[in-house]
Length: 239
Picture 1 (cartoon, rainbow, N blue to C red):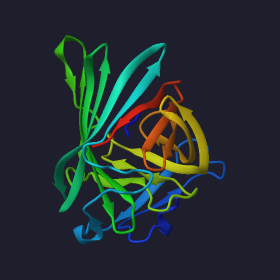
Picture 2: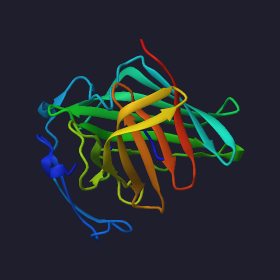
Picture 3: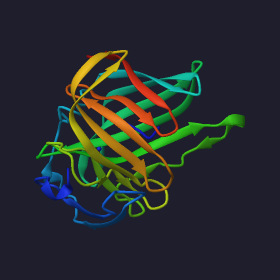
């Protein structure tokens, strides 16, 4: 499951413009071409309070991640820490996946919100703990390093439209997203939720897609992958 994304031409104040060319049926992976302007820190605000992707420091989300009959625990904590990337002060989110109490994957994600309410993704520091003590950092990237570029996770005013880039480090981090429905309903262990934004998300580097539901005031509440992996929100602890 890829981490915890309207046509960009309609996003006010965006400084990353992405033009996408795809077949009318949107079959397969689109061909992407982007024109990137310099990031202006003055276009960003201190808090991430987008209704569909709020990041309040001290909040912890607990998810159950199920695949092939096995359930892992995914704990996502919004930190009080910040990280400055390309001059922008980003909120740090700590994401831990546990199996039988042992950490399988640990990631620090960096997000920031612009003045139009769009939530940007500025990178991640990820570690996957493999057998025999091997640690993989594949998928880690930081905007501005090795030509990596930030992308969008959630628009200030999400609406169905063209795909958009969520992250970009050529050959390592090339996730895409597309809003497909507003006002959707979903039921997860946390409760029955209405008025959700449903997205389709995928990687340009591998086959398969994810469907994700974002609820107002919570953020990501459910995800289902092509491989039948299911992520569902179980609880939320607020500061």
